[in-house]
Length: 145
Image (tube, rainbow, N blue to C red; front, side, top):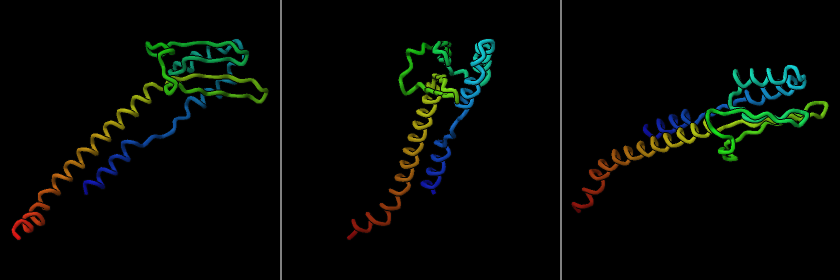
């Protein structure tokens, strides 16, 4: 029973659903930033409302705009903590967006750690509960022989 509970609890703790917000926002921004009058306003609103982890955006013309991310420097991010979304339009123009994934990766690590500790506790309790009856039913009769 404990093993089944452990497996179910582990599956619940480790479930991850793909988040398409960054990709979808980049598709919309690719079209909106083509118009120079709306480019900066579109980027500011997107960062404020849906993609606050965007820290670098490269326009179709090759110019780049940088943003602050929660008091951290983008240079401090590891390669694994960066998420790059490139959008190529029908006209061949390309926009790139770099996102910080530091918080997501940290949360995944904490969930993995919690699941590992939980499984260790369940196994310890299982072994402890199993050792008593084994001593009574197996070891003691063998010692009497």
